[in-house]
Image (cartoon, rainbow, N blue to C red; front, side):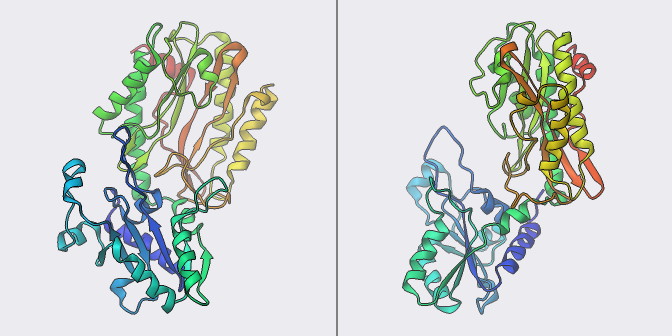
Amino acid sequence: MITQQEYALRREKVSKALGGCAGLVFAGKSNESLETMWRPHSHFEYLTGVTNESNAVLLFDPTHPVSSRREVLFLSSRDPEKEQWDGLRKSIGSALRTETGFTTVLRTGSLPLVLSDIATRCKSFATLMPNALISQDVSEDLVLFQKFSNRTPECDIVDMSMVIPSLRSVKSESEIQTIQEAVDITAVGFANAMSFVRSGVNEFQVQATLEHGYAMAGGRGSAFPPIVGGGLNSTVLHYKENDQDLVDGDLVCIDSGAFYKGYGADISRTIPVSGKFNDRQKEIYEIVLQAEEAAIAAIKEGVTLAELDAIARAIIVKAGYGDYFIHSIGHHLGLETHDCCGSPSPLKEGAVITIEPGIYLPDESLGVRIEDDIVVKKDGYINLSKAIPKTVVEIEEAMKS
């Protein structure tokens, strides 16, 4: 469990990195859709732990003369009629301050006045939200800061958008423990799926079996929409439909992970619908497994994802399937499935990454991907998902039960 003390320590690190600059982190606008659950921007969640206040804003004002005003949580005004539909919210008071861990909590309506004072007093803003691509809307903090900069002589804007990703790229012990719990919950779902898969069942039924296992083991659904692809669908990297019946003689690629306390797992296993790999399936599977295990064995502080990719790719190329390994070796994992990590620098101790080589042969309707979740250590690694059956023998045994 992430404590308020840990959230406060994270904010302290950001505040120190800002120097004399002020910065904003936004929770994100409310989601009016009934089809999807709202989640705050992962930067906001990482720094506050507040997950039920859309439109909230976190202000860093490190040079404020009053220490209690150097970190301020801004919340939108209460709307009793809206709360009847969406749920009750607390008034600003001691109970809310205790719950959030913030001494100063204000309404967002006062934010412009506060920013005007900062522009005049310290004349320096820093953008902390991710920089937008040319096709995206400009980040909210930059939009606001530009307005005040245009109205205040000598008010500067500094890009510090990599400060939070750099912090998030190294997980604390409590974060690693939470991800381990998400992986353990995922293991329950995969065990259910392996014993359930057989000819004639639908891919969506396999998904339902996975997610039922997650729920019964304490998870809060899936960290991302599960991929359950049989036959030709196993060769589609981000297959979404999950609507075909499984057929004897095919493989089914399952890529899924449970969501637990804000963090998610991301595991891939490829299993035979019949319960037994045929010779051709076993040939491809063993190549991918060898590539994955070689990359995992090389993990330690200081190595890069590119170097791990090269290790796995060399094995697949040597086997003659280099053109069929069409994605990179993996990614960081955390509050997001593809978690932010700052610059693509050498991995640090405490990073949590996935290793997931694959070979995809559409002409044979045969795709294999194997993926594990790994903690980087100073001189090695910890495989968080080692308990989930992975070898040919382990999978075939699990499918008997």
